[in-house]
Amino acid sequence: MFDKVLVANRGEIAVRVMRACEELDVGTVAVYSEADKHGGHVRYADEAYNVGPARAADSYLDQKAIVEAARKADADAIHPGYGFLAENAAFAARVEAADGITWVGPTSDAMERLGEKTRARRVMQEADVPIVPGTTDPVDDPEEVVAFGEENGFPVAIKAEGGGGGRGMKIVRGEGEVEDALASARREGEAYFDNDSVYVEKYLEAPKHIEVQVLADEHGNVRHLGERDCSLQRRHQKVIEEAPSPALSPELREQIGEAARRGVREADYTNAGTVEFLVEDSGATETRREGGGETADPEFYFMEVNTRIQVEHTATEEVTGIDIVRWQIRVAAGEELCFAQDDVGIDGHAVEYRINAENPANDFAPTPGSVETYDPPGSVGVRMDHAIREGDEIGGDYDSMIAKLIVHAEDRDRCLRRSERALEHFTVEGVHTTIPFHRLMLTDDRFLSGEHTTKYLDEELDDAAIEEAVERWGTEPSAGAQREGAAMHELTVEVDGKRYEVAVEDLPRGLAGGVTGSPGASETATASDSVSTGGSGGDDGDSDGPADGDEGMVSGSGEAAVVSDGAIQADMQGTVLSVEVSEGEAVAEGDVLCVLEAMKMENDVLAPAGGTVASVRVTAGETVDMGDTLVMLQ
Ligand code: ADP
Image 1 (tube, rainbow, N blue to C red):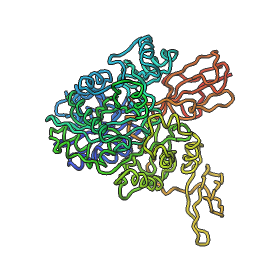
Image 2: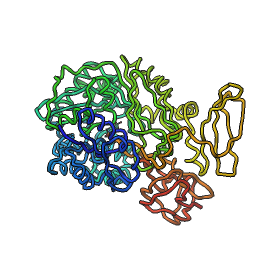
Image 3: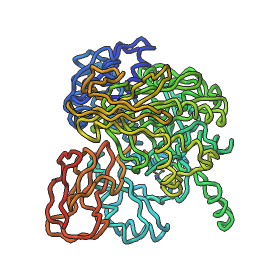
Image 4: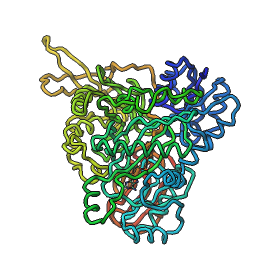
């Protein structure tokens, strides 16, 4: 076994890996960026090394700096977590070549075989695993995409070879959209995966996302740990995952599990991995069967392999009782899997809820800010994976996931009921979170039935229902984040022996703060600015955001700007990815003016009305603050 593992990641996943190390009696080393000096993973580790500035490219993605930190710490293994360098075969090769340091993951060769999507598709075809119809070679020419669409029918997905989480994936509904979509998929592929190569596949209309967790050792043993259903997605990003899938028949479950094992064996793969499939809903398959002659199409199609631990591995751990991260480390140390496929049993049901600092009512826009209250649930069947504590600052440098709530019970029904109480007693104040959205899902017939497909949230769920949920169960983001110099604090007061909760707003010195009573409170009072929070305090500047998850950057639109007298202003802190207009240009309502990235979300800033661009105030690559003017329109 190793003496010391360096975890090349941050946030909850870094802490998760360190916990597994501790139980194996292995020392832990954290790396951190300038923005994460006080991050939860730094607090947790035995020792920690600064690897550079906040920008991920200059720190968490700096391969040299990370290997150097491992050298300094005398670590004999590197675990990459997910996101950042986790799927970078070149980095894995670099670690393999470093004397005395072991890569906790598949070999760089296996990563290359499966990491590039077209190669993975070829490998799976050879293993007799059905793939989504499409090309097994990259495409360059818009004509090829058009030809594919004409032959197989639109819509078609153009996907970046290195992409994931919907990042670098563009849906084309007709010939006219091909050219722009191809350019955009390439741009995202290049920007985020350093690879502008793309390929095409059929875009399935109503699939379920089913993925199989696998574990393989260096002694030829390959096991699968059953499937997860990750069909609840918004803009191709997973929001809620569960194990097992409520929608698979035992036969299909068996077939998919075995297909995953075959594929992984064919690729000579070791360590933990996930084989992702799309499963067409049985209605669609049925219709095709009826009109489709003798042989029915397969009901499931291989999509891709994630050659790393995934965010949602926790759901599988809960139902199988197998500590996947512990096995990653043991397998990397050369140990043999000590259980047979038949030993893997599924006990009950588990659901993972991603708690993101986002406002569901504003198209899930990220909401960086200060976590003023953090009070997670507990007790039987409730697991929290997080690296955050009260008083931490959620910065805008990394993605928006701040915690994972995993609920386990003997069956799906009990699990969802237990989830209701866990989410009800999960209090986060200071930033918006996805908690109200999850609570809404627990009242949503489609989700409760387990019949939801990957399109359900984006295409069917009514936005008004989300707004209502946020209104009902949400929290106001910290006033500090909205308005300089003011902050809201909760205060408990007793009047004649009766307890009241009041919200106190403190304003800059010299101004009296207003006090609002909570519903039912009949008293008001005036407070000065000296009221302090019950938070941990003393940790000014803490930044303990999420790890850079396997979630990709996704596109939103029109949510990133406010308009004032023709000035189009950023309504969040972020980076200008591209400027799409120039001075003097005429624009129509809804045209994209520029693209802003914040917490890994790509947001199109749209023209609120037609006009002429009077001036462009920003350039690509520039960082902007909330309220900065991006473009002046006349
Ligand atoms: P990842 O699994 O790494 O998140 P992808 O970017 O390949 O990777 O896919 C993300 C999601 O996009 C899938 O879960 C699915 O909802 C959707 N998707 C991908 N490919 C297709 C396709 N060919 N047809 C329909 N939906 C797709």
